[in-house]
Image 1 (tube, rainbow, N blue to C red):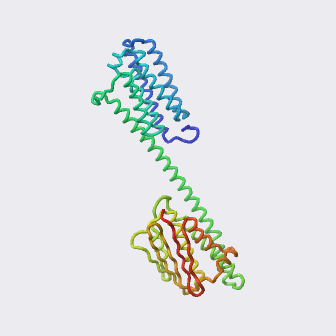
Image 2: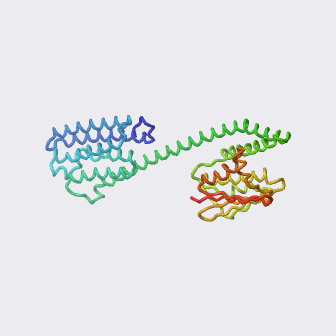
Image 3: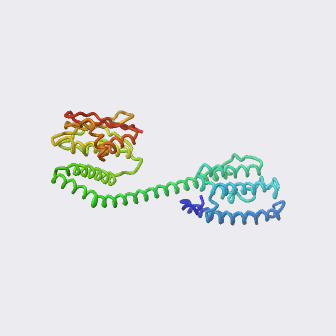
Length: 376
């Protein structure tokens, strides 16, 4: 991931890896000085060591600046490391290779394992370690099963695993922190808008509704429209203030119990009826809209009955009242007049959730809504 595109959460690991690279180069230099006299071609050994230093400096610069933090660069590093390990056969005898570690030192070769692990995680890091050890095994000409005397393969795998997991954890923590920051900013913005809506539109609608009823006559219909919109805005503000993080589960029964009162009877199962928070919130919003319609239209003495049913693969909320009912064609007329509480807040919500909203009503026989959503 190039640093220029967006901040890399693994940047501290890349920096620490370059410190390790420097220390491994110092160790490789000491090793080169110590064994140079034992090599068959010491001059070529020094020339290859110069390549090692130049490549190490280039890698350090690329990873620190960020443009090297991509798969093509890391693959190239692995290829260079494997090539320098295999060059041991060219600069030293078979006997020397058998008795010593591969020429550039396995400590320096571990840089490729670390780079792969930081970039792509523990699996790729361990595979890079295996590639390094295969090259070393080719140089020696045999596989050393004695891990008590030669634990290099264990170290390579452990480095790839540990560094890869650290990089994954850093990126995951960064993503969660960014999500939390976005949620906090979104919540603050919703609170600000809620205050503005409450101080402006809701109060104006409440005033229009109250004054319209006082005046009566033709303004009563405007008062009814203003009252519906006021209730819709209050529900919207309330849902924004109580919104919970996406992905969590919410008990629909606990939400519906809050609506119980002297005129609203709520029946829910003894066990929690869990839905994901977004679905539960929308189902609850539709039920609240249906209850508000009971208050507004069913008559002053109407009572409402809410029943929650958990059907396994779906959840159903039934809202029934004993009010005056809805005349045939009244809902279509309401839509034509711009009152879309039923069309949008109830039926629209259920359709959006992939569920259904079934209405049963007739004049003088009350109204019943059956709201069903599938359990995902």
